[in-house]
Image (cartoon, rainbow, N blue to C red):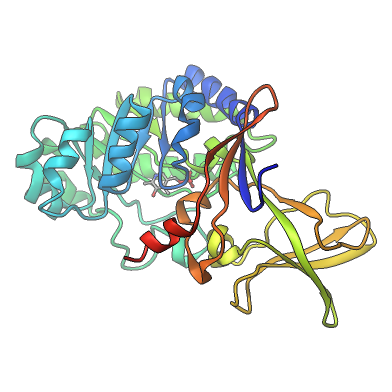
Length: 365
Ligand SMILES: *Cc1c(COP(=O)(O)O)cnc(C)c1O
């Protein structure tokens, strides 16, 4: 038996998302690239590769991982490239997307062998959370002045526009894409490819995939462009759990259960966005607050209901643990880092990676 804590990635669940991606690509002509910033657990890339055109990245290391472990089309984006990174980046990439006209001007000479693009910031987004809103005031994420962009349009072949954030509302997507068409159409007509970024929650239950596909196809036809999508979360949603064990139960006015994991260290994104973790079925007579074992006072996964009182040794599965978890895990408090395990198609479980004291030590010196 594998010791908890561990992330458990389910290949069959990945394939359910891939079936939607297959359908979306076939109907729309768009190409889907995995956004590695969300999920980069390469031991399961073999399950994703046949269904996605390649990867996109936010740094040299993500870019290199995409090239080496995923293959296919490899898009390179970074908020800012360093002088000492650019040659390596160009060496790994098929397309490089500059965040600013300044970076384009600085590095285009060294990127002549590959396609060059620019990040376009439409100055609106679907994000209601300032921290993650690419269109927040004074945003550094992309160029927005159509006149300025027009002056360099001959030096690029495409745009990346990332402005959706877990957007499950097709009507909103449709309306915002229409705004992009209206405000930037003259620029879009002059390029060959447009990436619409990530954040479209098209693998969610009930999402109108056919309508999205038709909308993307209409956009591609109107401007004569190859459309790319960069799903992170949508590609891997609901495809992993975080498996933990109850270590202690307390009653401090509320029933508390402390588990052998930490939201700060192992599901940091939830803490940052102040969202509770998910546990199912979350029904029963006995409410418990599920707490992490770091010494951070607010290291709390959430409050859930159980059919019986929790006891030391009980196992819990925290759901939807693939996106923005493993890529953000850290050694805070020296808490045991979860292993990474895979539920294979035949139901057997293989262990991709276990972490120990030497990994903790070597992360610091
Ligand atoms: C974060 C990000 C993505 C992936 O976003 P998801 O919400 O995980 O789909 C794609 N492209 C860019 C440029 C991003 O910054």
